[in-house]
Length: 313
Image (cartoon, rainbow, N blue to C red; front, side, top):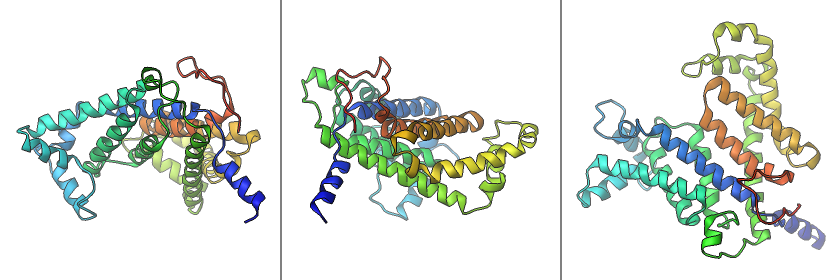
């Protein structure tokens, strides 16, 4: 490799950026986990208790998990540890839910950022693996976002940790490297998702969108409306394939970044409104805004505003 090529590669992998993207990711993922906890509050015991009386319970999910590996974290570990301390299963499960919610709130405030990120990731992972029969794609993306927070150069300057403990500002090049990894990860996710969709006929003739919008419990749109909008279903399927497959091509150049980002966010807003997948749409919007929206150099909302200016890529 030539010296000039090495310099270009280093400049690409280690750009000097501000921590605005990290603030977006931290607060967005904290909001995501907090909303998940509040949504599951009434069903938490039913989903994860071994005494719910149903055929599908935590023991069944963890038994299936054992077929893959006994080293995968699960809520059963916490329940057994609680038994050693004389705590009932219901108490341990409630404490796990409470600790996950508290970790999310601490992340939102930027208090004990690293510890909170690790705790949120571990507890969320335990819940997802114990309830793997009920989990779907949103949980994988939440874990991805929390993992990036675990390894990111926290705290960002808008976190309470930065002011309470007088933490030194994160190194701009180190911030840039973590941002680049997130950007490349998102590019691969959308590219292969789009290519996979494009290889089948369902996304080109509207069948896949029809099935998605008409299958319970996602049938928010009346069937009569779907029938009348059949030409739009075909157009929508083609747009989804193009948006995702061409994501790595148009999201990186500055001239097309805003357009493609708006298209992808619009797609996820549409999924939320027509299928009720609000948490899935939220986590995808958060990841996109943190990965690429933070580099648009738009004036951030007052709640998120940094004390320092942005560093252009």
